[in-house]
Image (cartoon, rainbow, N blue to C red; front, side, top):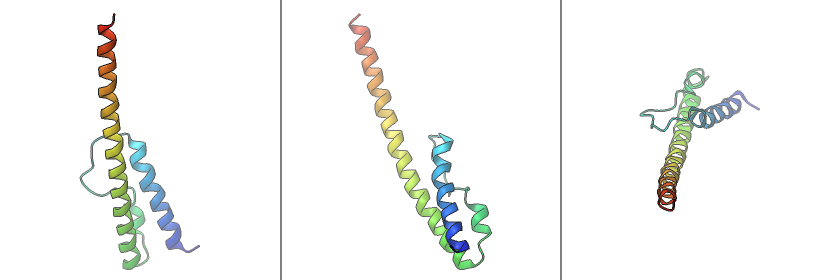
Length: 91
């Protein structure tokens, strides 16, 4: 394995775990900062560009997934409220 391969693997893990672990619903305005140190430590400008592109692609996928999860949470909260409302009516 080359250092670049290890770096990309570490970047992938950091970016995929980071958003899931924070539990925040708000969308971040910029790129993930989890990979900044790794990107800055790249040996060449080409590797830095590749890592930056990879970070941005992973951020896009993570944002889309978080939006899906947020939509599902909103749907479930609405469904839950409707069930509670109908339960009160049957009492």
